Length: 399
Image (cartoon, rainbow, N blue to C red):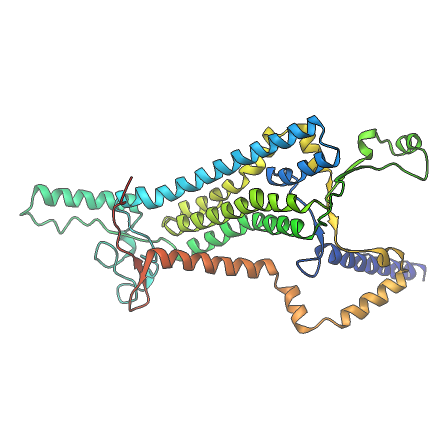
C-alpha cells in the first residue's frame, strides 16, 4: 500500500541519515591523537593568546591587533598569577594552618565505623574506639578535646572520665570518594583543552599561513551574494586555525601551554588533597564542585575583560580539519550504505569494547587512582591491619 511504501521510505531515510551522522562525526572525532580537528579555546584567554598574535601576523601587524595581542598576553599573565595564588592559598591552609591547629591528616579515620569495635581501623586519633554517636568533625572534636584538657589542667586530681570528647573521623568514605570523582570529572574539560592545544601546536604546518581571509564569492558579484544571503562585509571575513612559524609554536608551548598544564596539575592535586581532608558529608559535596571554579578564571577574564573585537574573532575561529570528506560528499547514498556496512563488519571485539567504554572514563579512573595514591603516599601510614592513619604531624619549620 501507499502507507507501507511511505513508511519504508521514512525508515530508509532515517537509516541513511544515521549512517551519514556516524560517518561524519567519526571523521570529526578522529580515530587517533593525530586526526580529527585542530582548534583553540574560543572562550578563554589561553586560546586568544595563541590565536590573536597569528591573526595580527596575518594582517601585517596593524596597531589595533598588536594592542589586542599585548592586552591578551597581560590578561593571560594576570590569570596565571591569580590561579597560582589561589592554589598557594589552598596549600598554605593544608600545610601551614592545619598543623598549627593540631589537625592530623584524615586518611581513613572512621571509614569502617560500621564494623567497629571489632573491625579494622576502629581506633580514632583520640585513642578510643569509634561509635556513631561519638563521631565528630575536626572543629567540634578539637573543641570538645580542649574542654576536657582544660578541666584536667584546672582539676588535676578529679576524675573526668565522664567528659567524652568523642572521635574525629569520616562521616562517609564512599561519599568522599564520589565527590573526588565528580571534582576530577569537572576538570576533565581543561585537561582536554590542554591536550587539544598541544595537538594544535604539533599538527598545524610550521609555515606562516594566514589565519584570516576574505571569503569573496566567485559564482556571483559580492553585492548580489550579500543581498541574497542578507550578509554584511563582516560576514565575509573568516578566521581559521592555520599554520604558524616554528618559533611561534615554541613560544606558545613555553609561555601558554606549559604554565596552563602546571596550573591544572596544581589545582587538581590541591583539590583532591583538600577533599580527602574533609570529613563532613555536606562540606565534601559542596567543596567538590566549588574547587573547580579556579580553572574557570581564564574564561571569566576573557568574557569580562576582553573587547568585543577579540570575542568576535575567537567566536568565528574555525578549526583546521585533519580529515578529508571528499569521498563522503560525492558518493551516492547506495555507495555510502555499502561502504558503511563493509566497515561495520570489520569491527572487532576490542573496537566494540572501546565503543562501549569511553576513553574519558578510563582516563578518569586512572587519574583518580594516581592522585589518591599521591595523597595516601604523602600523608598516611598503612598499619598492619591494612588501615591508613595520619603520618606524624609537626609544626612548620618556618612561617
